[in-house]
Amino acid sequence: MAIKTYKPYTPSRRYMTTLDSSDITSRPAVRKLLKKLPAKAGRNNNGRITSRHKEAGVKKLYRVIDFKRDKFGVPGRVATIEYDPYRNCRISLVVYKDGDKRYIIHPKGLKVGDTVIAAEKGLDVLPGNAMKLKNIPVGTLVHNIELSPRHGAQLARSAGSYAQIMGREDKYVIIKLPSGEMRYVLGECMATIGTVGNEDWINVAIGKAGRNRHRGIRPQTRGSAMNPVDHPHGGGEGKTGPSGHPVSPWGKPTKGYKTRKKKPSDRLIISRRKK
Image (cartoon, rainbow, N blue to C red; front, side):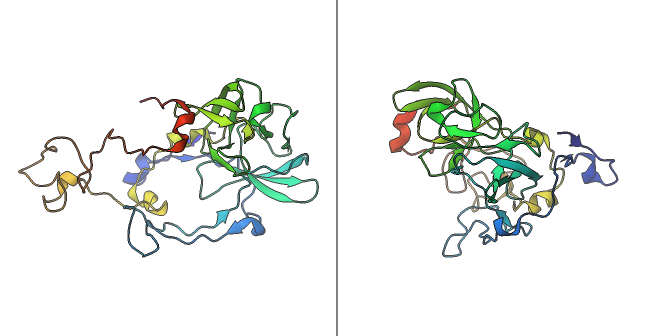
């Protein structure tokens, strides 16, 4: 997929780039697969901001995605490739032989008219097919990986993402995640063959602040530009760096400070992500 550049007829256009949308084959989405999500804009159930620099962004409808891939043995034809405002990857509309329609994350190399199918085992290793991890050959690139059986995919779902199956051990499968982390995942969990498409998304330059506002991202103010009463980095004559280690507005260290709490699933991690 190509990156589009523009003539600089305004200052912000000089550096802005977008993705070529020639791969999209359909604009209107399937109505029954659309859902309205409330715009919380970083607020909790009391209406208080708990995550800063968020806003509602442009109005949009959520596309219901089939992350479970539990329609075993029924082949489906890829009818369209569509844009999803909630994701950085494309989605594909799959029409099954029994008439059911579902959206899936669009894998790289899948074209309109291709057939995809989900089963426990015995499928060809082709993009879009889904099987249980224990039945996928070692070395295969996969995405949409479940962490618990029948709970739906949680890993490797964004544009260009993939994980690799490294081996098997008892009831577990060893996978290497996009972050570089190696971990055990139950072999009963489902995964989809191939890598997520739209991998050029990482190369897009936003170009102007207004485009981030559409995405629901509010501007941030540097701590060093504030007063001492507002931020630990604030105050001083002229531009001054933080005294000591950089911290958040509430004094918690940032930039490399580990905040992950111990979880029962830590025992399934073989090696941590690359630093």
